[in-house]
Image 1 (cartoon, rainbow, N blue to C red):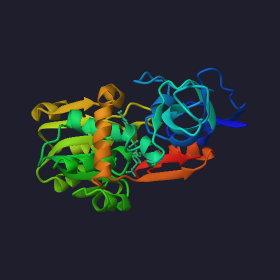
Image 2 (tube, protein in one colour):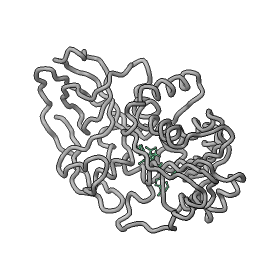
Image 3 (cartoon, rainbow, N blue to C red):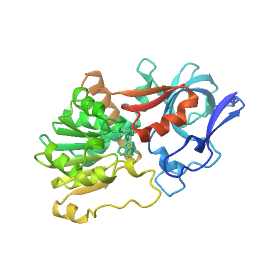
Length: 330
Ligand SMILES: NC(=O)c1ccc[n+]([C@@H]2O[C@H](COP(=O)([O-])OP(=O)(O)OC[C@H]3O[C@@H](n4cnc5c(N)ncnc54)[C@H](OP(=O)(O)O)[C@@H]3O)[C@@H](O)[C@H]2O)c1
């Protein structure tokens, strides 16, 4: 049989295991031009939370009682498509199924000699987000101070390292002392703050950033962001990439009004969606790969075993259970 995970209920607040349902379907039979894919690695990502609600957003909501989809690396088991042969590995936006068929549209052949999981992380959507968000909106200059929230995650850990490569002083914010230590020891951040043991984020940022904040790469939003914004410099750039701290809110989150802070500092705050920069993906991949090959960029992964663990791995993102990219290996 062929296990599939469907969206049973739209989560209210933090997602629960009961929001997901496992179903068994027949193994698909492929037709002309189709390939049969076996799922190898599944990316779970915070943005999927948005697609589980029916609010209008930049990508369409998942349909109830239908399979959920995310970034997946899969093996070609059978092929009636000239572009693919049995044994090839591909990545693409695919459904949470053990096996599925595809006509190949949107699939990217990946090199099985490279670590396949990298195509879901540092060489995939999260690496592209880090590189393009930072360079296109943040426009870092040597000697500037960059603050990154969600710094020990898939996007944040790469943002901080790129900031260092481009000559910035980099300060990261994460949820445990171990993660804060790792930011400095593994990724080379200059300073790190554990937000769970910090009662005054505004003061903590002021201490960690004596020259103020020139660039803020925001993955989390909420009160952490309020504290960073209170320390921005003239002409600061604020990249609004994610707001995981408020994704599970059931009412509109309230906070300080930011308008006067932005006016007084002539600062730029801009929302970022990686898919809007698709034309720049090839050059970004070349740069990320070259840093990786030169040993200038590193990454972490939390790999969870088993198809049945996909919903729990997804929920774990909201509990900080990952270091770097959260991936489920089938
Ligand atoms: N706009 C785009 O195109 C785009 C693309 C990719 C990702 N994103 C966004 O970027 C952010 C990071 O994504 P990712 O894939 O790299 O995920 P991730 O950072 O690898 O994983 C999520 C992390 O968020 C932190 N977190 C969870 N709840 C939190 C809370 N209440 N307050 C503060 N931190 C919290 C946890 O780390 P701690 O232990 O440190 O709390 C957790 O490990 C997400 O908001 C995501 O939606 C946006």
